[in-house]
Picture (tube, rainbow, N blue to C red):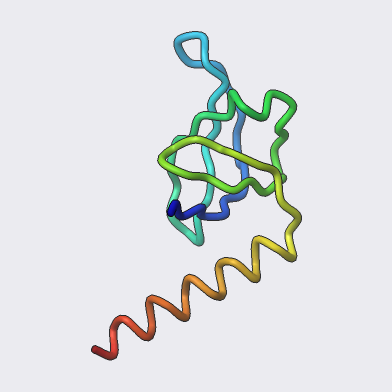
Length: 79
C-alpha cells in the first residue's frame, strides 16, 4: 500500500535535467519531482508519493484528501 499526499505547485523548474517543483503540502514546502507530469503548472494540485508527483488532481479532491489525513492525524494524537 502506498500513501499519496496532495500538494499545490508553487514553482516549476529544471534541476540536473529533471523537471522539479516547489510544492505546498498544507503549509509545508517541499521539492518534488514532476517528471511524470511534464505539463504540470503553477497553481495545480498533484498527488505525491515518495517525492514524485504521480497524478494531477483537482482542488476539491486535494482538499478532501487533506481533510482525511488531518482527521487521521487528530485521531492518532488521541491515543
